[in-house]
Length: 261
Length: 318
Image (cartoon, rainbow over all chains, first blue to last red; front, side):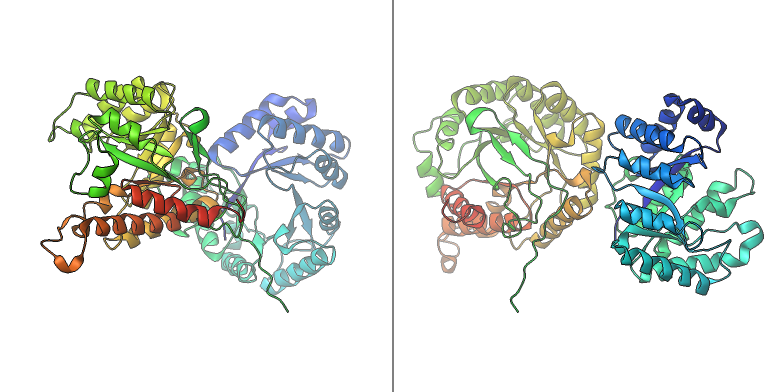
């Protein structure tokens, strides 16, 4: 057991500011967002460069160097559908503060991302799905076993595969939420690491509701054994929840100033 | 099949903190294993021993101490003798007389004495206050100024006066700051955080987690030290990676076993031997629980604990 790992999600090409910065390779907006997330307590920073079919290799190398040079080799999750771009990013990646994370593989079209992570001694986020959302936990578990066996067969350590249960939007899939939590518990019982895009649960909810819903889901998921999540670390309520849960789970020793650490 | 031992080492380690300057400077901490687990990895810096003297003089009733300091006419003389005590690594100056309920010695007078001692001995100096928080804040400020450049350790900053002590001894005069929490693990971490937030680097803080004589609630001390060390190493908690110094003598020499005379309790035997035993057993227990330095008084205790440390930490043949 160890402290919960927050992967900061805010360097994402879906944001207009970041997209423009990536298009023009402007460091400032990217560095600014990275700093905000690190200061807020992110252990890893996700770098989503989108599909990046044209210049992915160049762009990912640039982003990896930019962030690691400026932030003491902060560990990164390399996030794109362009596999060559991830490999290129890993080729310039400094591992002194942690292995790179490949974001992500699944049991379908993206299964080769797992092979690539294994070949590069990286951590791999493995979505327990094939095409679309798994219908139940039997399905999740089948994909999980498939990916686990494949990874182990390629010489990966089981702790380097971080299984993503697929968090589902509450508005529309309210009846599936307990399945997700139960599956996290199953992963935890098997001693496996887990992560995922947690804020998906509050998608399409009013802005003021989202931090509340995300925080509650996170607390419940942490109790089930979730070991990491890809979230917005600048969400104060959410980070307060992570830190408080780490205290309750005895992953870190309490001090009155724990929220400032 | 033979037993294969796998050493339990950690990627995190206790901070190494140096006190004093020059050849006699001592470094405590630095290890990445549990206390005295030299079979898992070499102990980076052996635990150290401080010899404590008070500006109120020594206890004449304890023959071994009286004998050692015989002829010393004042605090400075005592310090010179203490600096030569076999087994001692650093000097601990206790300015008890500054307590308003004692002689209420002025802070200027104490600072002048501290300076005189620092000029007369080359041993690293640890400064203890008078156990009055308000006075200690003022006392440490003056002594820190007088000892500027000596890289001394000030014991201790507490919840009520850490701001003054961190600002003065820690920041203005670049000494090491002792953070004292009375066997309260959460406060121990909190004080480190607060002193660190004032601008004193974690590498310049030493923890005094509190003490108790063996048999007087020592199990709380031991479990506190255990938990602190485990958080520092296994959870990589940077706010608990400071080395630990434990003042043993104050407690050991004030419990009944160490002060009741042989006349009163003939069946208990020599009072001095009881005190020495109390000091040795408490110090040994502290070292086993995680102290990187212990503060002692009696020459016999210091010699014994020094021998114990060598036996536990030195490689064969050294």
